[in-house]
Structure formats: structure tokens, C-alpha cells
Amino acid sequence: MWRLSCKRNEHGEIYKYKAQWVVLGNHQEYMLHYYDTWASVGRNETFNVMLSLVVNFNYIPYQFDIETAFLHGEMDALVYVKQVKGYEVKGKEGWVWRLRKSLYGTKQAPRMCKAKLTATLSSLGLASTQSDKSLFINNDKTLLLHVHVNVGFIISKTKSSIIDLLNKLNSILKLKYKRKPTQHLGYNLNWSKNELKINQTDLIIKLLRQCGMNKCKSVKTPCNGNFLNEIGCNPLEDALEVTLFQKAIGSLNYLAHHTRPNILLTKNQLSKHSLKPNQHHWSVLKHLLCYLIGTKDRCLVYKQQLIKEALTGWADADYANNKEDRKLITGYVILVFCNPVWNASSQPVLFNDNSGAVTISKQASLNAKTKHIEVRYQYVCDCVMRNLIKVVQVSTNDMIADVLTKPLGVLKLQEVYKPLHLEDPGGVLRTEENHLG
Image 1: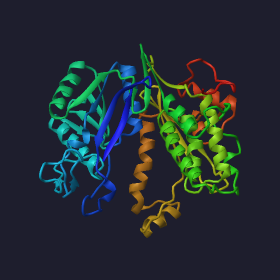
Image 2: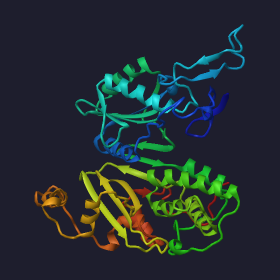
Image 3: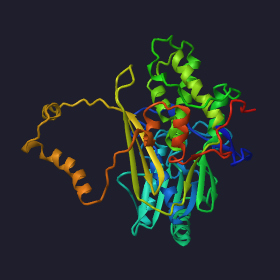
Image 4: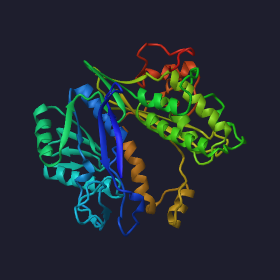
């Protein structure tokens, strides 16, 4: 089948019409036509750290896009497809084609694409890291390359090393590339001297229109103080509403983990109920969308800092304030050269078939059989003693990680914007009268 699409630039204008021949991968059978399925999805924390390096240490950024990326992989299973209508081989119209290369729509296409790219980069002297398999570094650690499916982001201190790598890649995989991109994976990037502003305004506008909230009045907080404890409401019975709720959670997840840490708490709580949302959850979602419409242009700002502390960490926990499950919510903000990386999550449940581990977890004492655990705990103490790290108690009023673990009022919320580098282009929070046209 043919898939038709429009390519748009950073201004939302159509600059290219695209037609792709794709196969119906839903007809493939597991263990017969394919085995493993996964795509190279880079970690957002890695990308954020790379942006911090660009701003603070004048690394040169380049973006590249692998054209027809999924067509480069070698098929590892027998897959036959019907001939393309209008392009049949004369006299053999009833025949089928055997795929030698991966094709858009096949289950294994993303994995084959990553395998081809990894092998190519390895031959050029780049190796992936343990912490992020989508991050590749050269031998002398002067060039970093981050891959997200078919889009890459490269930084280095020298332009010549980037151009040399891109030329070699282009000879094997056809590329399009540019310096200082204005768009990357849904981000809008605004470059200026010693500063970079990124936002996801386009995604917010699209989300608001999908949910029919593009003309709502704005509010000043992402949630109200009691949103965690409202239970017992009627479930959503309309399947379309449930689907819309789930789509909205997906978009909010991308926002919260990339440019909007201030909505992560609300998003996480709504995500728990994505399978069976009720009227209260829908109400909380609409409240969050009302907040986003008033702050849709808010940017995450990367600034060049005179004092470059490599790492400063903030951690906070909200102790069992959620009456639904009484689980602890832990959040952290790590300032990498004064620019933030963040995450938050609920306390996990561990299922363990090792009786020894379960016994140790229930006993406070340590003995010779648990010295490996003690070594890990002592490592932190050793780092403090050697002045490698410093542990400092922080007042609740100064804890910026609070925004990840508990609902904040207007004044407290505005106080954490500055250390999180969240800025509004107009310099003030938008008022209730502002809405989309």
C-alpha cells in the first residue's frame, strides 16, 4: 500500500509531499516472519546533557537525517510481498517479490536499521556506551553522536571532525544534515549567543486541538492540591473518550520528560489510570491542558555559566500522601553544568524468588554474608570523605525537586521556574484571557 504524507518546516509550512510504499506488517507472524522488534530510541537525558555541553563548552552541533533509513537493513527472515500496483513485472503479474532489504511496515525494519547503523559507525571508530546504546563516542572522546531511529545529533569541538564523519556516513547511507538545527524530534530550538531556548509549543497546540481545548481559559497551576485523593467517580464509558485520554497521556509524557518538568507529577498520576480513567481523571487532564494553554510558549533555557559545577543534585520524596496506594513518590533534579536533567517515579514493587535476599531485606543487621551490600553503602561515605561529593541538607523552601513529588501553589511553582531554567518569552505567566484561535 502507499502512504501519503506532507513534510513541514519549523513554521508549519508544507515544503514537500511524500509517498512511501509500505507493507502490511500486521500480517506477519511471530517466529515465522520476524523475531525481535525494537527501535533505537535515544534517552532524553543524554540529549539534554549534550545540549548543556554545546552551550557551556562551545561544542559545535549538527543534525542529520538518514533518507529511506529502513531500506538499508538486511532481512533476517523469509518475507514475500505482493508487487506494487502499477509496477508489476510484465508477464509475471501474479508473482510475488522476496524482500532482500527491510521495508517500511515490516516488524523488524527498525531493528535492522539500527543494526546497519551500529555496524557502520563501528567501522568508522565509534562505539556505543553502556548507559545509552543510542549514544556513540569516538576513540579519543571528542565527538558524540546520539541517534533516535533515523535522526542523529552530533557534537564536537571541531567542525572538521563532524564533516569528515558525515561525509563517510553519506557514502554508505544517504544523509541530509545541517548545523544548528531549529527543529529536532519535535523540539523548537532557538539558538543565540551563549544561550539556547527549546520548547514544544507545536506539540501543545496539536494536543489542545485534539482534545477540543484550544479555546479554554488558562489556569496558573498544573493541578490542584487535592487531585491525588479524589476517588470513586464514574468511569468513562465512551471508548472514544478513553482513546483520547490515552493519546493525551502519550503526548504529555513526551512533554514532561523533555521540556516541562513542572507537569511530570500530574502526568505520572494520570498515567496510572490510562486503562480505566474515570470522570475525575478526565477533569484533572482538562485542568492540566488549561495550564498548558497559558504556558504553551514557556521554554527550557540552557545558559552558559561562569561557575561550571559538573553535577549538583536535588532529591525529594513525598511520603505516602496518595491515599489510593500510599506509595512513595521520589523525584530528582540533577544540574549538569547548571542545566537540569530530571525524573520522578513511584516506589516499585519487587517480586523476588531468592529467599536469602528476602530475608536480608527484612533484617536490619549486616553480617559477613552481606558485605557486598555494605560496600555499596560505604562507597557513598568514602566519596564524601574524599571530597568527591558533598551532601548538604536543603530547606523545604529551597527544594526545587518538590515540583516532581507534590502539587505546588502558584507562588511556590513560580519560585522553582528559575532554577529549572523554565522561562516565558514574555517574562510573565499568561493570563486567563489568552487562548488559541
